Length: 159
Image (spheres, rainbow, N blue to C red):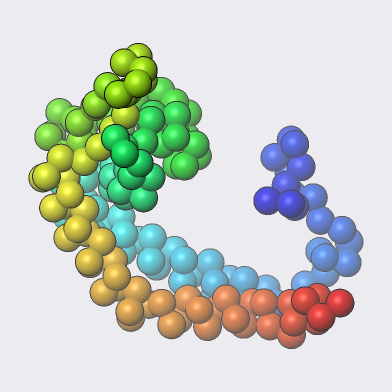
């Protein structure tokens, strides 16, 4: 995020802003491959009765799986959402029996979140489907990124 200033605007130098037609095509190709994978991910989540952000939250819980699970603040930070949005996502998943809140061992005021057995099962199935999709689309995504970074990136690394 070095190229984002504190106002959230993109901050690049004039020389960095000069792109060739091939670089624009490579950037477009890379974004297209990302969007294709995200579309698959959204459809897979919905097929399991989840909204995409709910699936992302479940994956974040698994990734941030500390001794008792992550806190709401950790989840919000990881997902780049506000604390109250993380609380709402957890509320919806808890109603469905996919996650549960757990009071902290040392500090009972601290609430942590963990997947239930049903949540673990659903996440395992979705993650397996995503891995299978990446075995197909991953090489295209890698190639698009390689094309995008191409010789210019090699030259910048050698400087």
